[in-house]
Length: 415
Ligand SMILES: Cc1cc2nc3c(=O)[nH]c(=O)nc-3n(C[C@H](O)[C@H](O)[C@H](O)COP(=O)(O)OP(=O)(O)OC[C@H]3O[C@@H](n4cnc5c(N)ncnc54)[C@H](O)[C@@H]3O)c2cc1C
Image 1 (cartoon, rainbow, N blue to C red):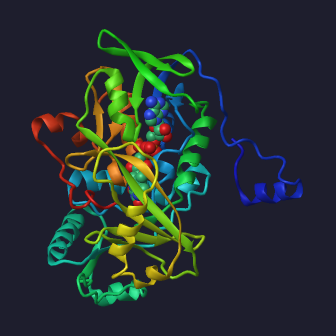
Image 2: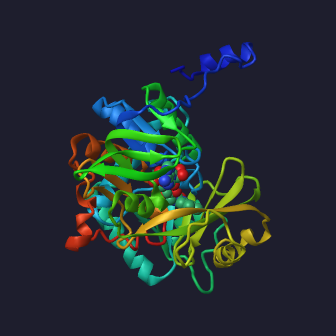
Image 3: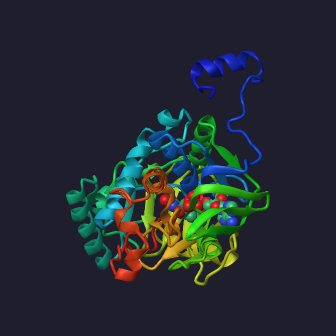
C-alpha cells in the first residue's frame, strides 16, 4: 500500500499528482473465500479489517450491493460519544471511541476525528435526573463525562438560548472527548487497509440468497454468481431482516428511515456538538461551515433512503426556540438512511441458528460511533466462533431470555 505522508504529497505535487495508486482494487469475485461479509458499510469493513489485523484471516470478501459506504455509513451526522447507561454498552462504545483517537494513524488515512466535545442538553427535570444517573454510571465505568450547569453550557455554546419559555436549558451531560469524524473517510480508510491485506471488496454485487446444508452456510447467491464461504457475516443494517430471512431465521428488528439535513455554509459559530433530545434535534458545524442537523425517525416502517419536507419543518420548528439563529438560515439539502432498530435499542452481535453464520446489526440511529469497536468485537466472534467480552451480552438469546440492555434513554432518540 502506498503510504500517505507529507513527503508523498510533495513528491506528487512535482509530478502533477499522476503517481497516486487507486486506494482499493475492484476485483471480480473468486469462487470461494474463507470468510464472506455481506455489506460494505463501516461495520462490515471494520470487521474485515480486524479479522486480518487481529487474527491473520485475509482470505475475505466484503460483498456490497451498491457502493462502499453508500448506506447509513455515508449518510449519518457523525456524532461520536460513549456516554451510555448500561455497562455492556459503555464498554463497546468506549472501546470504539478510544480506537477513533488513533484511527487516522493506524489506517494511514485521515478520518478527521475531531473530539471537540459533546453536550446532551437537559431541558426537563426528568432529563436532569436521567443524565445525572448516566454521569454516575459513567464514573463507575471509567468513561469520562460530567454534569455541567446552564452558565457553563452558555459559555460553550454562545448561540444557544438557555432561557426558552417552554424548554429552558437546565444543564447538560458533557463528554469532552466526544465529537465527530468524517463518515466517508472511515469507510474509505478501512476499505483501503482491507484491500492492502489482499481482501476483495466486491461492489455492485447484491446478495440474493443464502445457501446452506446441514445447518451450515455454504455460500451466497449474488448478482455476480454463487460465492462459496467457510463463514458468513451479515452486516447490512436496515436490510438485516431481509438477509436473515434468506438465511432462514427471523430477527427482532424493524427498519425505519432516519433523516438529516444541512444548512448553507456560514462562518464558524459552533465548535462543539449539541444534542437536544427533548425537542429532538442535534447539531454540529462541519468544516465547510454547514450546520449539520439531525432529526427523528419516520413514525412508520419503511425502506426509503430519502428526506421528506415535513421532517425539515418539524425538526427546525423544534430546534428554533433553543437555537434562534437557525430561523435565519437557508437549508441546503436533506437525505435519509434506513436504520435497524431493536426493542431495547441495543445492537445484536451474535451467532445464529446456522453454525458458521454470524450477524451484526441493530445499531439503529447511533452506530457510526461504534464502527471500530463493533468491527473489533465482530471479528473476534467470527474468528473464534464465540463472542469475546465486548460482544458477550449482545447475543440474540437475550430477547428470548429477557436480558434486555435497555438504552432507550441513551439511544432511543439520540445518535
Ligand atoms: C440520518 C442518519 C443520521 C445518523 N446519525 C448518526 C450519528 O450522528 N452518530 C452515530 O453514531 N450514528 C448515526 N447514524 C447511524 C449510523 O449511520 C449507522 O448505525 C451505521 O452507519 C451503520 O453502519 P453499517 O455498516 O451497519 O450499515 P450501512 O452503512 O448501512 O452498511 C450496510 C451495507 O449493506 C449493504 N447491503 C444491504 N443489503 C445487501 C445485500 N442484500 N447484498 C449486498 N449488500 C447489501 C448496503 O448497501 C449498505 O452499504 C445515523 C444514521 C442516519 C441514517
